[in-house]
Image (tube, rainbow, N blue to C red):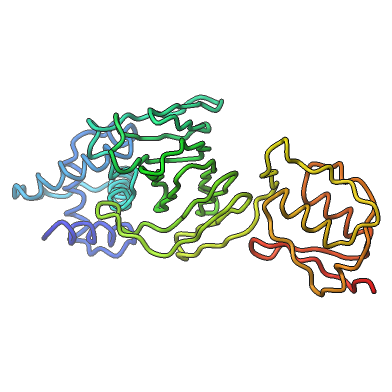
Length: 332
């Protein structure tokens, strides 16, 4: 029996598909673990060590003793074997997870874990600042490479990357690679939905899937600009691009328009809002551009401002991908 067959064997046990003889063998394996308290106290990585130890003993040729199976023992066996199976799955997943792959070079990396209830700011040697949210962790080299900058992330974090055109910045997180030259963006995984969200506040980023952590093979991907985000679903290998929930202005404070209009055509209003937030706003038919608008858009939120404009001209809007579409009959 090789190690792959060993894991498949344990899987059959977890699915209650073993023969009586196989169940007796598993009872013997439980005895080889040798510590009842171990089953309730081990961490995830210790399950892998337990499997290694058990595998070594099995390979040593130890023969099973006469089975002594009682109800509590089989419950413990189930806990032990199920734990080892889960650990095996986690270990296999870890081998393809960039964060775990980086763990193989612990001497070359610093690791920051935010175990507090507040955000923790980390400043890297290139001037990049990273805001780690509670529960997040990051690994980064003691010194960045001369041609690129790479960090490994678990959890949610906001990056404000120092500009360095000669050394692109890469963030590896949850099988995603976020590639930037100098920008600010958020990476937010969700354990509930199994998806990862990358949203851009400034600059431009490239986001693509990493299929192999050790060889850094990649597939697919999207380009994001300010106020855009992508939702990546690993199970479906899909990327869905859309706008962020609360778009922020992209123009310097000194260049911010007054957003006061007096009988101005909708085209003027749309262009002002589009430039202010870096968002493409289009109309369903050109006659909408003829509709006049008068008023001061004092609200900060883009969508609230669009509500005011659309109510005034008898139109509606919807978000389609990374664009906003205004619908209505228009004006003559």
